[in-house]
Length: 208
Ligand code: GRF
Image (tube, rainbow, N blue to C red; front, side):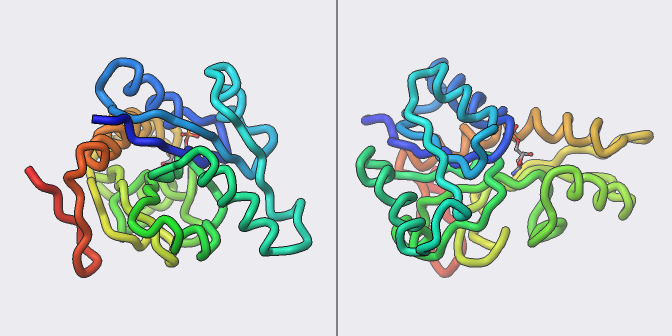
């Protein structure tokens, strides 16, 4: 089986990206990260990429007056590196529809809650965990899903529950959720690497 060629999009520290690299190195994931793209020149993910000799590029909308040029700047490295799947690992910007269409059912996002609850615009980072605590939820979790044109709405590939514990703060909860993110993301990508995922009528089927 040839390793699945990935692009990772990340805006921040990139711990999910690192977990993917480690899973690949450990032989738990048959994939290779060919390029990392960030909107944020300060992203830790770019540092990790460079330390691992992976091409790391900043593509930020604000550097482009022309929309077409911006979309091209995103799509060109993906085709140059023959990327088969795009992994959003803490990517805080909306993916342009042209990129969504070019990679239909091949863009995977991770969300630190059980979608469709606690998703959508503005629901990112600590906002998610705060909202879960305000609601008094007893469980939260992680969702890995395919990306379509709507925020946090694409077909769900995998979900896992995480308990909310007495006295949790957004930080303690985020840390517990993050540990699960680091496992479930690579496991989900591996399903694609093994060619076991199909999407019909907006729902994911995983061949046993
Ligand atoms: C994660 O909690 C992920 O679910 C969300 O953004 C965070 C990124 O963390 N989409 P990191 O940059 O991978 O450490």
